[in-house]
Amino acid sequence: VSTQSTGYLRNRETGGYLGITRKRKRLELVLVEGKEKAAPFFTSYARFISFDYPQYHIVNGGLKKIVGAIRDIDPLDLWTLSSCNIVNPASGLSFDIANDGTFDRLSSGATDMSSPSQRFDVGVSARWSLTSSSTGMPYTKHKKHGHVFDDNEKNSLARFAWMARQLITNNGRAVRPPTDSDTEADRYDFRFGDKDSEVRLRGCGISKLIADVITGKVNHLVVESGKLKMSESIDSTWDLEPADL
Image 1 (spheres, one colour):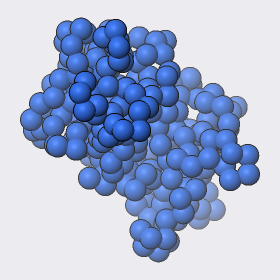
Image 2 (cartoon, rainbow, N blue to C red; image 1 turned 45 degrees about the vertical axis):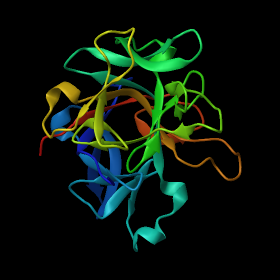
Image 3 (cartoon, one colour; image 1 turned 45 degrees about the horizontal axis):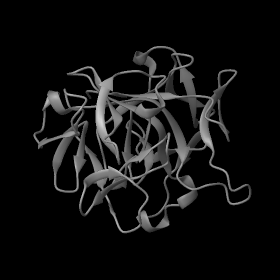
């Protein structure tokens, strides 16, 4: 899976959305008020691509024309999502971490945007691994203990993808927060239009996939004085809201 549903990017601190305006025959990425002025984007190969101008994608704090084939993509232009709260609107629950006395497991809790244990690093598109933002531990498959957050190199990484606003495993199962917080994340047969399994990403950092080659630090898309810029600190967080187009 290389793409996911089309959506809008909303800045939580200002309430503004990413929009696109044309100035002097050039397209510019701007912050606008209201979803009616917002620009929809879709994701492909770890890029945010304009739905209305699909030859352009977000690069740093602006728009850049896509040139060449997939092999010509600059790795320094790719994105990931940091410290996201992943909520299931149907239940009102978010993914959370529960410790069973030995391992941290993927469970659920009432949505709490201030809870570090409800924050996860996720991918933008294709196959990606889920990592706890608070512990830095990846979600893995342990031979004896099943799915746990652990940095043991003998474990295999659990891979996920986005499809139809759902979190999908490598085996094509939809994952959502369990209604019982003492149990592990539920897995269901994937079905298009399954509202019960849809999830939303809240309070994410929009972060570069690869750290700056000079500073060695990861840069993030932020809003400063109404302008879009890059920063080494996650000073701005974003909600990814679905778009029905």
